[in-house]
Image (cartoon, rainbow, N blue to C red; front, side, top):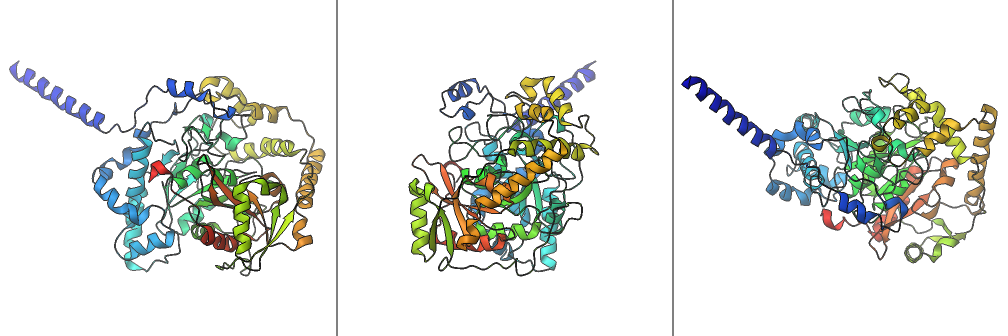
Length: 545
C-alpha cells in the first residue's frame, strides 16, 4: 500500500511538473478585449469599428509548437545582437553578413520566428499578421547553410531568405485558407510561384493574414479581417490607421520586419493599398507576368501576385525569383531579355505624368518638386474620367466560375459561392460577423455570357482610354498616390510600383505609385530605385524597432 501511495505521489509530482512546463510555454494567451472593442466604436472611420480583434480560431501556441526547442536556445541577447544585421537590411546586405560568417540562414530564420513570437504574443503590440508557419523551416535553413559551404551564394538572390506568403497562395505543408473557415483544412500542392521560390532556394517561412476571400466577401467591412486570422493591425498606428487590403498581412509583416519579404496578390489595389498604408515597396505586375495557378481566385481576368518588400532592390530580386512561364495559366507570358534590363538610373531626362488634381496634397506636391529638381520633366495631366461601369459584374462573374474551378479538386465540402454562402449562414457570428454581401451579390448576378464579354471589353477600353496620355505625351511613367488609380490600372492591365514617399502629420504612411505601360516592370523598378535613393523616406514603425 505504501508503495502504491509513493507511486501516486511521484505521478502527481511528474504531472504537476509537466503541467507547469506546458503553462510556461504558453506565450500566446487570449484576453478580454471588450473595452478595446467598445473604444473602437468611436472611431471616425466606420471600417475601423471592429467587432473583434483576436482570432476565435487560431491557437498560436500550436503554430509555434514545432519551434519550441530551437527557440529555447535562442536568447534575447542573441536577438539583440543580430538586430543590426537584419532589421531593415536589404537582401544583398543580409547575404553579405552570412557570407562573412556573422550570420547564418538558421540564425536568420530563428531571429524572425523569435521576433514574430515576441510581438504577436504581446497584447499591446500584436498585429495578427501570421496565420501559419512552415514546421520544417529551421531544418530547411540548416540545409541552406550546408549548401552555402559547398557553393558560393549570389548575394543578390533569394537563396535562404525567409519569405511569407499571403494565405491564398497554395503550399504543400500548410493549409491554404484565404482567411475563411470553410477552407480551414484545405491541403494543397504548391502554387506555381511557390515552386519558383523553392527552385530558387528561398525559405517559405509561413502564411500571413488577409482580408477574407481577398476582400471580395463583405461590403464596408474592416480591411485585414478574416475569420481565421482575426483583425490585422497597422504597426504605424494599431487600431488607428487601416492596414489596407486585401494583402494586409503581407504589408504589415513586411513593415514590422517579420520576414525578409512577403508575397501579396491584387485584383484592384490589393498590393498597392497595403504597401502604401504600411510604408513598403509593392509591385503589382502586368497581368500574366507572374503565374496565378494555385492561388485562390477572384478574377482570372485581373488577378496577379506580386512582391512586397522594404526596398526596391529586394523587390527586383524577389520578382526575378518568381518569374516563369506557366502553361496552365492562359495569360502567362515571359519577358524578353531587353524587357528584363534593370539599371540604377537617374531621374534626369525622364518624362513623368503628374495628376493636376493631386497637387493639392502637400506631400505629393513636395515629392514632385524633388523629382523635378533631380532633372525629370514633369507633365501635368488631367485624364478624362471614363466610366468603370460593370466592374463589380466582372468580378462577380469571374469569381462565380473561377472559384469552383479552384475548389473542384480540393477536399472541402463547399464547391461553389452559393455553397459558401449557405455554410457561412450556419454560424454567421463566427464565420461572417460583418456579413457576406458581395458573396450574396455573386449568387444573384445573372449576367449572360455575351453580356459578360461586352462588360470586359468596355472596361479594358475604358482603362486604355484613361491612360492614352502615355502615348500622346510620350511618358516614361505616371505618378499617383497610394492606390488612387488602381481600378484603372487593373482594367488596363498596367503595372504599378508603390514606394514610400512620407508620412502625414498623424504619422500615417503615404506612398508614391509609379504607373507604367505593360511589360515595363523593370523600367519602373529602375525609376523606383532612383526615386528611393533621392528621398529615402521609409521608417521602421516606432514600436517595432
